[in-house]
Length: 374
Ligand SMILES: *[C@@H]1O[C@H](CO)[C@@H](O)[C@H](O)[C@H]1NC(C)=O
Ligand SMILES: *[C@@H]1O[C@H](CO)[C@@H](O)[C@H](O)[C@H]1NC(C)=O
Ligand SMILES: *[C@@H]1O[C@H](CO)[C@@H](O)[C@H](O)[C@H]1NC(C)=O
Image 1 (cartoon, protein in one colour):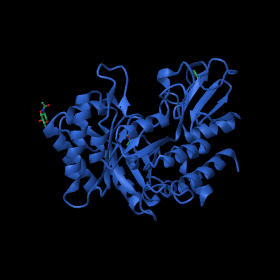
Image 2: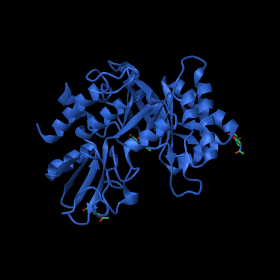
Image 3: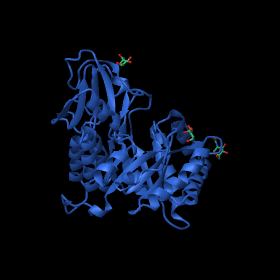
Image 4: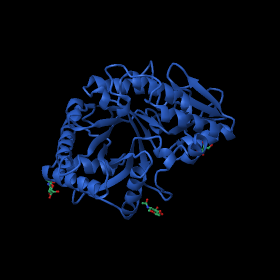
C-alpha cells in the first residue's frame, strides 16, 4: 500500500468514526446521533459528477456549492449547469443507502456574490424576493435546506441586514410543508477585521443563533497568498503568538453567544503552498518568496499527498500548533492530514461542538477512499 492509499484508508475510518461511538460525549453535549458531518460539493468546473457513494457514506449533510443571485431581480438564478446538476446531486444524497441531507448553498467567496448579498439584505422587498426564490428552488429540487455563504458582512449595518435576511428565510422556509434547514458559512472568528473603514465588525451571534440551525465556521485560510513572505499554518489549531488559529476563532464564536451545538468546525481538504527563500529554513514562519505551485498556491489534499510521495517530502507534525506541513526542496505546504484532523476533531468534540464540515468533497479523491475502505 503506497502512502496515498494509506492516507486515504486512515481518513476513511477517521471520518466514519467521527463523533460516533469511540469517545462518549460529556453529559451536557448533544447525543452523537445529532452530530453534523457535512461536506461542500463544488458544482463548478468542467469535470463535475455527483458526489460519490464513498463520500456520501462519510457524511450526514452535503452542500451544493454554489448557486448565485441575479442582482436585477434579487432572485436565485440557476445556470443551465445547475439545472442539470441539482437533480443528480439531490438524487445521489437521498438515494444513498444511508440517506444524506442535501442543502443549497448560495454565494461563495466572490466579491460579486458579497455585493449582491449586501444590496439584497439592505432592502426589505429584495429580502423577501430572495427568500421566496431560494425556498422555491429548494422545494423544486427536493432539497433539505439553504445555506448562506456571504464573505463577509462589512459593517454593523450589514450585520444587522444579515440577520434580517435570515429572519426572512426562516419565515419563508417554515411553511408550507417541510421545514428547511437554515445554515451559514462564517468567518473563522466572530469578529471580522481587515482594511475596510468599518472594520473590525462583530457578528450578532446570539441573534443569528435564533434563526439558524448552525454556522459553518471556516477555520482555515488563516494564512495564504496575502501574507506569503513567511510560511504559515493555514488551519492550525493553536498559535501561541497570534489570533490566527482555529481554537481562537471557535472560542470567539462561543464567547459571542453562539451555542456550542450550533458551531460546526471547518476542516480543509486542501493545502496552501509556499516557495521557501532558503530550502534549509523550513519551519513555520520561515522566509518565503511567495506562494508555490497550484492555483494561487492551493493544492487539493490528493495533490499534496501525491506531491509528498513523488518528491519524498518530509512531513512534519507540529505538536504545539496541531498543524501538519511538508517540504521538499523549496516547496513548503500547509495542510491537514489524518494526524492533525483527528486532533482537531477531538478538540471540537471536547468543546461540545455540533460537528465538522469539509471543504471540499472530491479534494481527497473519493475513489481511493472507496477502494481502501470497502
Ligand atoms: C458547464 O458544464 C459543461 C459540461 O460539463 C462544462 O464544460 C462547463 O465548463 C460548465 N460551465 C461552468 C460555468 O461550470
Ligand atoms: C428594493 O428591491 C426591490 C425588489 O427587488 C426593487 O424593485 C427596488 O428597486 C429595490 N430598492 C432599492 C432602493 O434598491
Ligand atoms: C514558486 O515556484 C514555482 C515553481 O518552482 C514558480 O513557477 C513560481 O514562479 C515561484 N513563485 C515565486 C513567488 O517565487
